[in-house]
Image (cartoon, rainbow, N blue to C red; front, top):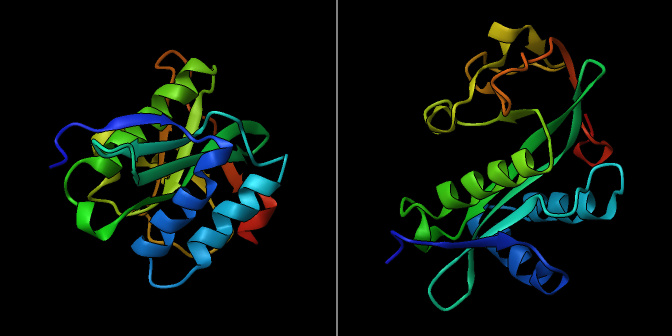
Length: 170
């Protein structure tokens, strides 16, 4: 099970399923609450950048969300959170959702993505250490956990401090 996933943008009908994925994947409801808060914030939510990986029955098993942030004054996207139901972890569902989200961002003309995540996972998508590009945050985080990706190889990543959407609370 799981070597091929169907990916699609979230629709209004998927809201409970996306919440269920996050509630199953994380030990507290904080991540599911964050997705709901981002969805409710017009400055953070970008239609088409909440992607689902579905199993052969169409059930959502993975989710990746790109939301608006800024690197200095440059608009960018933040990949957070990404979740996979425990029984489908390490099957490619998360990677499928992330790849679909990045492809959707490219198709919308977005240029930059940042992620605060596991340094052994995100480089497979092309993310590199944000610090190497002059990108930082206002809170303590390990250098290798804050990563950035340029979606357009002809456009360099901007430097500066990341400003996250209000629901992140940072």
